[in-house]
Amino acid sequence: MELIRSRDWYSTSDGSDRGYIRPHILKELWFHTGTACNLSCDFCLEGSGPGDKRLELVKLDDVTPYIHSAIELGVQQFSFTGGEPFLAKDLIKILKLASQYAPCLVLTNGTDALQKRLHQLDELKGSKFPVSFRVSVDSPIEEVHDAGRGEGMFESALTGMKALHDRGFHVSLARHMADGENTAVIEQQYRDELANRGIPEDTHFVAFPDFLPPNSDGSGPDISTNCMTQFHTEESRRSFMCAFSKMVVKQKGRMRVYACTLVDDDPEYDLGDDLGQALEQQISMKHHRCFSCFKYGSSCSET
Image 1 (cartoon, rainbow, N blue to C red):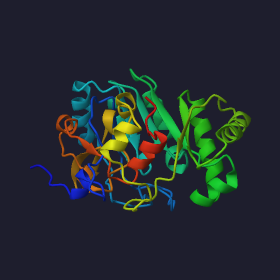
Image 2 (cartoon, rainbow, N blue to C red):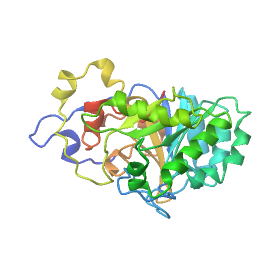
Image 3 (cartoon, one colour):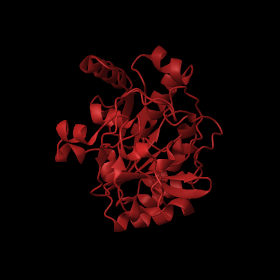
Image 4 (cartoon, helix red, strand yellow):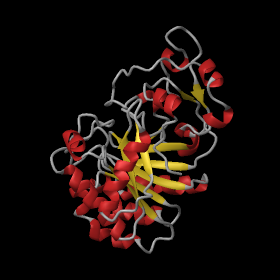
């Protein structure tokens, strides 16, 4: 049954045609492992925390059909986010399956949940395709990072990152981005810290603006169809995440496909349970996080 969407899906507040993205390929499939997390950060874009069940922890049987469907659709990478993925008991089994078909990326806070299961990662070293990890380190300054994530979490995250590197896995780093920041200076601070710990100075960084917690109103202006054609080209529109990726979540016991990794707090972005059919649906730019993609070219992807 087709979802009946609100007027806002199609029109801006002044009645203009709403901007949209038309998917053209499935390059990357994301799995949300669940909103449970060992940390509780007030800025978390998923509102994750200990025991949170807004999105449920996934099991191998939940994701297996989507892995096979994605392969048939030509997927090039599987990526996993949370919550904290290492709280999903079946994560290693899932990675063992997925990495037989495509490279895998796992987003983690690098702290206790990961570190308690480091020994299990050895099972992934014989995979046909590599498994890599992205560790969240919000700031190169310990006090700033710990103010958001808890005392000692800066040290713990970098300990986890070093342990992954020492085990031979490729690691990248997710950080916060501020308007008007001096990116070169900030990233050099990170590189100095990484070098002091024996982590490669050329580590790849992925910077994110403040996406605000779930169900926030946001403050970005409406994005009209005219905006999308005046300020973006066909090529740049194809770089929006919803043009080449989808995310699968477990919600109320059902597996659902969402338009991208940033919109699972809005049921209008629930595209059903069929991955192929989800790729055929035009995606409205009505979510407040869409403006971050419009303005910054934000992407959770590393493909």
